[in-house]
Each structure stands twice: as C-alpha cells, then as structure tokens.
Length: 319
Figure 1 (tube, rainbow, N blue to C red):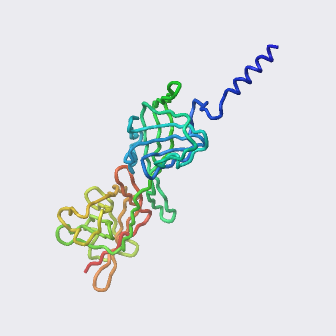
Figure 2: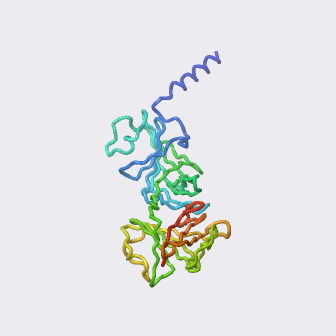
Figure 3: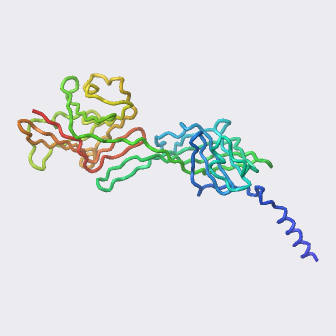
C-alpha cells in the first residue's frame, strides 16, 4: 500500500507541471547565434521558446581591441538592459525587433537584470593571405560576459557570478590600398617626403635621404634602411574626402579633408622586420628608384596588420 501511495504522489507532481510554464532555474545560450536588430540597439540570442536580450548603445562596441585583461565595462541599469524571456511557443526575430510584435508566441515569464556588469573584450579578426603572408583586418569580435548579474523574477532573484553571453562581430572599415605605384616627392618644405595617393587614401614615407641617391645600385644589392622613430616613417591615412596633390608637402597638415584613420609603421628589427629596400636603375636620361617594404607592420591603437613579406611601395623617377 505504501508503495502505491508514493507512486500516486509522484504522478500528481508530474501532472502539475504545465508545459507552458518556466520550470528551469538556469539559462544557457552559449551555442546560440548572436543576432542584431537593424532598427534599434538590441542584440539577442534565441533558443526555441527562449530569448536573451541585451540592449546597450551601439557605440559600446568600438572597433578597437581592448587591452589584455582590461575589458570595457558597462554597469547594468535602466538604459543598459539585460532581459531573459520565456515564450509559449517558438520565438523568432520578428518577436524581438518589430515595433508591433506578433500576437503569438507571447511572453509567459521574464527575468530582468537589476544589477551587475557587462564586460566586453574586443579582438581584431585578421584574414591572412598565404601568398605573401600579409594580413587584413576584416572585423572585430566582441566577447560579452555578464559579471555578478542579478535577475529579478516572479519568485525572487537569480544571481550569476559569471554569465557568458557570447560573441558579437562588427565589420571593419576596408582599407582599399589601391595605389598606382607611381611615387611623388616633395621638393620644398619637406624634401624627404614621398607620397602616393588614390581617392581618399594616402601612403607616405619620410625616407632617409641616403636611400635615394643618383647612383645605380649593383645587381641584387639594393640600399637598405630600417623603419624607425625619427626617419623612414611610413604612414597610411584614410580620409573623409577626396585628396589632391596640393594636400601634401605643406609645413602643417591641412584641415580638409579630415583624417578618419591613421596607421603608423612599427619600428623595424634588423634582419627581421620593417626593412626598406631601394633599387636604383637608369630610366632614359634619369633614374628610377624602386622601393620595396619587407615585413612592415602598420598599427593603430591596439590594432595592427602586415603588408607581407615584400610589398612594392612604388617607383620614384628622378633626373
């Protein structure tokens, strides 16, 4: 008889669970894909009847790698929201992003974060080119973790010391590098400045004058220099408008067009990186100086990319 009573009690408990009610006290979205609404600042993950929503200003995700061990931190508040929802049916993007959400499925339970910190660790996504060992930054990965997050729910609170939200990827601005390889040289104010420009981008080199001489170099023996801090300085700049030749060779940088990005060369290591090679040959009655950059890295903040094993900067013609 006692065994029969226990079985009846167990059956009653099982029947008391309604499939439409939230019975889980843990949530896990690590395997779900991160998505974003195009009409607002909501980033979200969906898993069948569940949704995890993060609403913070879009400028919280900066395309600049964070310092190792020092993530961006945002306090959870009324304007920086984290919400977990459980629906009575499978949920889709239009349940999250539409101004007027569909009538079904509808929310049957919601946890709202009332405290904690949003941590964002950003790294650059680099695309390598095996042909020349160059790299390009194609995007930025933002790994989001909630620390000491407290959820208010119908029957109390739920606290997580560490709650991983996951990765969110933003696209990087593509740097064209569409130069024609014909170099120009300033003659008056900054005679050691070489430059090449195309559209809204420019690649300039403050070159050691000893690398550009009126002597033909022996076969397979170019003049060599090293990227430094005070000489042989390479800069890539992307502008907010179109460039003309009058922009260059001034004693001060013109105010227009404005610079939107500036990448500086990393100091070279003898025999290893940051090497400049200049080969001088005859060109009619003048000379042609072909400049090659070897294993040169350009850096902006915590971001960097490499020009590869051998990048032809261009050709300078002199009389």
